[in-house]
Length: 58
Figure 1 (cartoon, rainbow, N blue to C red):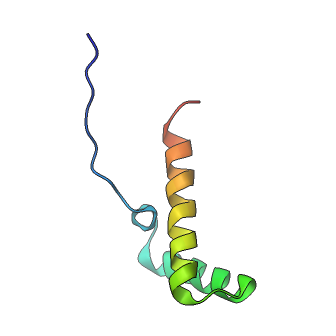
Figure 2 (spheres, rainbow, N blue to C red; figure 1 turned 180 degrees about the horizontal axis):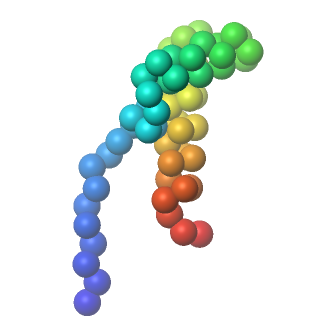
Figure 3 (tube, rainbow, N blue to C red; figure 1 turned 90 degrees about the vertical axis):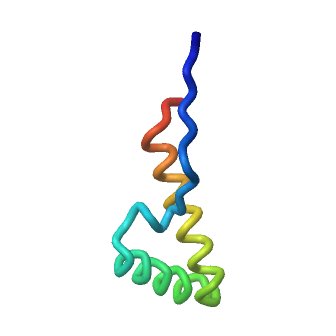
């Protein structure tokens, strides 16, 4: 028998300090010519991918 535990969805930004998240967003916005909204989405999803990769095998 396999037991599955449901986990609540988290945002990538929840993995880092809010000040650090803001600095990352600023850098992505400046270096890639994105508006702050797009840069925040890019950083959030990047952190989510890295967090998932770090905690799941394969």
